[in-house]
Image (cartoon, rainbow, N blue to C red):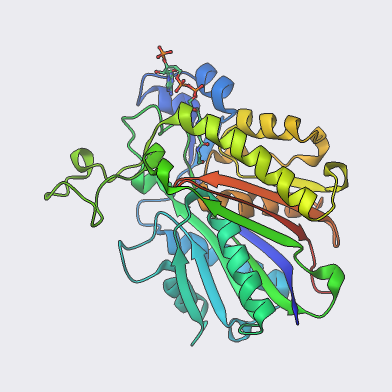
Length: 332
Ligand code: UT7
């Protein structure tokens, strides 16, 4: 049976920056409140004509280049997004494939909100280990600014845009294998974080975006509490199941939703500060893109070395959550 190896990482961050100061001109908030409650100082916002697939394509191109792979090598493309280019179809993954010149590959999107990258990682691992696919391109790409209500201070201060991508390939080497991926959900919490309308569950006929609830809505404080509790347990479980202690982790790379959530989970797991990767201050919450963007930051800073063990964890709308133990395994 082949193993699945995490070969490369890439990301794209749109240049336009929205600072806390900018937000004080849009809603009743302050830099002090946002910094203290979330750790976020700024987030990047895509250009009006820049689509989720455009950002995903740029991130994926970097990941392919860094893996030394050509578009024709890729036999599956999976994109995690809650802000696809088009409502329903076509899938953003098919557009990214076309942009990259990837032909005849299986391509589809998945919707698991902020846990999206861990879900696509589990899909890639399963397909590669089963022998059905050899080289899988996984992407987390989000234009959350397109589904954010900039009159709602409870959400608009949190979210940003961006994309990250990774190449997962088959290997025979045990030491390169992605060790484990956990994914889970509980739909009874669906109303904590949702875009209530625009789908078949819509109660509005006229899809006026402002009134029909096509924007994200969140019960932030309740979500916060479930996030800390669930993530801490989930990460404990995956470490225990694999006989790994938290001090053996080289890089703890959590979903970047809120510094206080990251800190609470990190403290509960006794993670040292130097193990924890933090990008929330500069990117905000980019949902499914946040983990690969953070891995890319670590890689570009020169601090992600071959063989080092990454622990990923995420929590998001659904509710969904997951974690993964992933050694970084670039080709020689
Ligand atoms: O990524 C997927 C999952 N998402 C998350 O994990 C996010 C989870 N939630 C959070 O990060 C936090 O709950 C928030 C940052 C959204 C909110 O922080 P909080 O500490 O839970 O604040 P809160 O909702 O309990 O609100 C506290 C107060 C309220 O005022 P009163 O009722 O005490 O007078 C809010 O109205 O803060 C007020 N408030 C604000 N004030 C200034 C809420 N948003 C703002 C704001 N600026 N932007």
